[in-house]
Length: 532
Image (cartoon, rainbow, N blue to C red):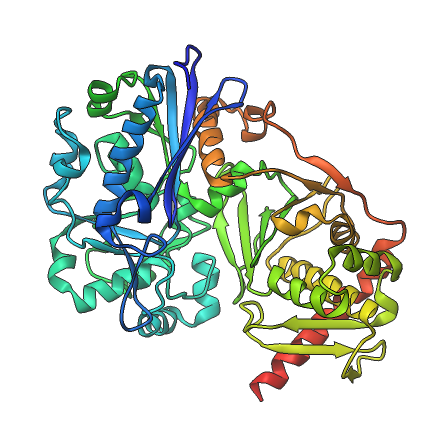
């Protein structure tokens, strides 16, 4: 691209498989994009899809030096493309949630005195006590999870404090494992960062604080006081508060960019570094979610993002601090049975045709004459169950539905589940509530109509490729004015808007209100039968 003359903001995303960057101008239009793929661009680290899969089948890590070297490569690629770094007013970023980085003692001084004649990778070669960082795919900390829950009074008590029950991938449990199995590495550690705050530290030339939103995914932070929970710290590892330092709001201006980047790449001396956050909170910003809204990503797995004011932490789903409004929260629920289940039913009931699938939805009535289905082809996360369960209008289990009823039962069941579990976490439909739909199935208008009817809210579609990256650029821009009281909504009001796809059908609320309770009761029955 040609050299930029106007000011812009940069958003980086240190995701599992690649490092991405987006630049937006003052009109919030994307003016530059770039990426570095870990497997192909950095083959010397021998990763598969950006990670190292260990022999035990549970441990999954990524080399921290790979992330550092990727940033070297990225900035050089941007330079060769003619990107003008002197136009950048602010940068922010996101990182894959739950990954952790262990800075060796003495690394802060090294960060503060980087030599602009050398690349970051060589300068920071000996800066990490743990060279392979635990990441979100790791599931090797069951023992530590059970101990943490027990230490604070149970799974629900831990959720009430931190927003989630103990999860193997959550950072506190990973820290506990390192302290227990590699005490020398833990004692060597001067600062523990998340992937997001690690990346921010590189740009800042100093240790960057963990932001509230990404800090919510550690099983360590009280999401209401927004401080580390002493019972959780005590149950994890000694001297942990000092190694983490205090968390900070996601809108914080951490300071100016490191002189290293000014001298090596031509950044402005007063270019601001805004706190980095996790990739899921970054996506909330990229989708421009607002109070009362819900975002539903309809992909291989289905993910629900919620903006909520009064959270009710539960044993399912996660409550995080909101990355764009410190007085609010975001909830996240993930479902494994998404598009693959829809595709199986399409193949069995409409000959592999989405057109036939959509016709069946259009030809069957809202509520499916009382027929309800629960479809878990693989073990679901919420609730932890597997199998296909069909119920008639009298809640009696049946072996089969007609093809048309089966298709509607699947789609209605999937969306009833999403609303039931969202409401358990504190979600409420308010005047002006929108549903934002993304992912592959969001192109199917018949599916979106059912989504709109079940949620009694209009559905909008939004094209947000690289939503976490774009959200980081938006957050960088907001960070410049957040201190003056400008809301995120006002800061990004010029961004490309979501497009209205469908509105609720007349009478939808009357049909689905009773069905919500029925679905919740039937799902509970399925779960009870599984555990007996």
